[in-house]
Amino acid sequence: MTWLGIIQILLVLGLILLIAVPLGGYIYKMFTDRRSRLEVVYAPCEKLIYRLSGIKPAVEMNWKSYLKALLLVNFVMVIFVYLILRLQQWLPLNPDHQAAVPWDLAFNTAASFITNTNWQNYGGESTLSYLSQTMAITYLQFTAAATGLVAVIAFLRGLVGNRGKSFGNFWVDFVKVHTRLLLPLAFILAIVFVGLGLPQTFSGAQTAHTLQGAVQTISRGPVASLEAIKQLGTNGGGFFNANSAHPFENPNTITNILEILAMAVIPTALLFTFGRFLKKRRQAFILYACLVGMLFLGVLLVYWSETAGNPILHKLLGISNVSMEGKEVRFGLPLDSLFAGATTAFTTGAVNMMHDSLTPLGGFVPMLFMMLNMVFGGKGVGLLNIIMYLIITVFICGLVVGRTPEIFGKKIEAREIKLATLALLVHPFLILFASAIALVTKTGVASIANPGLHGFSEVLYAFSSAAANNGSAFGGLSGNTPFYNIMLGLVMLLGRYISIAAMFAIAGSLIRKPVVPESAGTLRTDTFAFGGVFVAVALIVGALTFFPALALGPIAEHLQMWSGMLSK
Image (tube, rainbow, N blue to C red; front, side, top):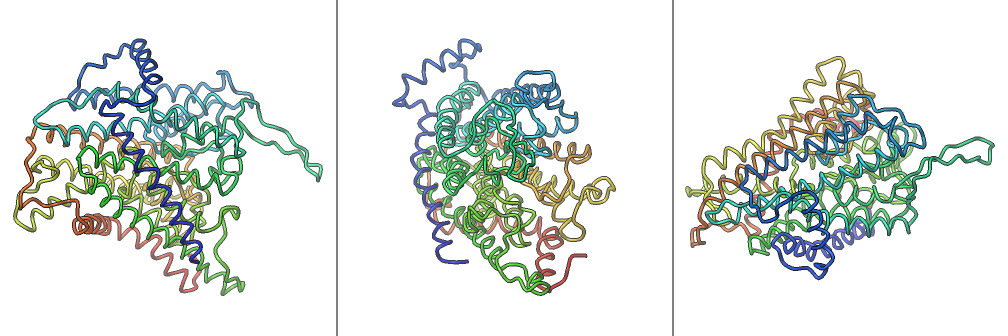
C-alpha cells in the first residue's frame, strides 16, 4: 500500500462529491416541479407519453395506491422479461442462434434484474440473444433503477408532509426518472464509452484467425449502451461473463474511473436531495461524511490486505509480492480496491476483478458492506435503508434520555418502530436462513467448488449479495442449478419488496402527523455526535447479527492463512 495509491482513491471520491452535490439539487427540482432549462424538450415528450398511456398527471395517490402501482408495474415487467428469455430462440436479433433460456434460469434472471440485483448465473455472450440483452436486460436496468428512485422520493414526500395524504403520482414520477435523468445520462455516457473503445453493434460474433493458426470466436454486441445504464442504475449485470474485467466492457483506466463515478453519483446525490427536502443541507453533509468514511476505511482494508500478499505462497514458493490473482493489471490495485468497495457499498454488483480471488480480509469488506446494506446503497432503496437506521438510532437515543423519539419534526411511535424493525430484520433473516438451508442440503453443498472455510464464505456471500440486491459473487459457487436459481431468486424478491413496503407504511403513518417545531429538547440529527452514534448503531447491529457467520467464514480463513495453514 502506497501514499500514491491512497491519493488515487481520494481523488476519485472527491470527483464523486463534486458531481453529486449539483446533481442532488437537480433531482430535487425535478421532483418538486421546478422548471428546467430543458423544459421545452422534456415537457412535450412527457405529455405525449401521458396521452398515449392514459396517465392523468393531476391525480394524486396515497401511500397504498402508490405502492400498488409500483408493485403492479414491476409484476408486469418481470413476466414480460421472463417470456422474452424463454422464447428468445424464436425471436429476432439472434444472429448467434442462442437457445431458449431454461425455466429456472429465466426465473432467476428476471427476478434478479427486476430487483436491481443483476445476479447472473449465465454468461451473457454465450446465453442471451441481442434482443434479450436489450429488451430484457437493458430495459430492466432502466426500470428497476427508476423503481428504487421513485420509491425514496415518495417516502420523502411522506416524511416532510404535514397532516397530508398525497405521495404524488407514481406514473408521472416513473416517466420523469427516465426522461429527465436516466436516459439523458446513459445516452451521454454510452457515447463516451464508444469513443473509448466499447463496441456498439448488432452484428454477430466475429471469427478471427490467430498467428498460431487457431480459430477464435470474438463475441460482441450492443455493449456500450448496456454498460452505461449498468453503472448509472447501480445494476451491475454485464454483457460478458467477466463483467467489467472484460476489455470490451472496461478497456482502460479512464473507463474504470468513469464506471466508478457512474455507479456512485446518483446514490450520493440522493443524500443531498434528501437534505433539500428537509431544508437541512447540513444533514446531508453529515450523513455523507459518515458514509464516505465507512467506505474509505473499507477500501483501505481491501487495499492493504491485497498488497500484503499471501503468506502461504511465501512459505511454500518464496513469493512475497502483492496478491494479483484474479485482478486486471491495467487498472492497478488502488482502483481495483475502490471498485470492489464501491460496487458493494452502492450495491451495484459489477466487478473489475474476481472477488473470489480476494484475500480473506479483502473479501470480508464487500461482504460486510452488503450485510450492513446502508453504506450509501443503491438507487433510492439505499437511502430508504439509511433512513431506517436513522429511525432506529433516534429511538435508541430517546430511550437513553427518556424522551419520546422524534425525527425531522415527526414523533416516532410504536407503529413506526415496529415497521422499521421489520425492515431491518428481514435482511439478516433472508441471508442467514437461506445460507443455513444451502449448507445443510446435499444440493446446496454440491455447488461449492472450494472446500472448507472458503466454501462457507461463497454461500454466505451469495445470499448476502442476493438479499442486498447487489449481484456480485464469489465465482467458486456454481449457482446455475435449479436449487440456487430458485433460492436466490426468492431471496432477491423478498429482500427488495418487503423492506420497500414496510418503509412505505412508515411514510404513510408519518405524513398524517403534524410537524413539531424544534425546541431546546429536540435531538439534533445534523451533528457529528449523532452521526457517530448512527454509525455505531449500524455497526453494532451488524456485528450482533452477522459476527458468528463472519467468524466462521472470512475471519477464520484470514487467521488460518496467516498461520500458514492450507484450507482443509
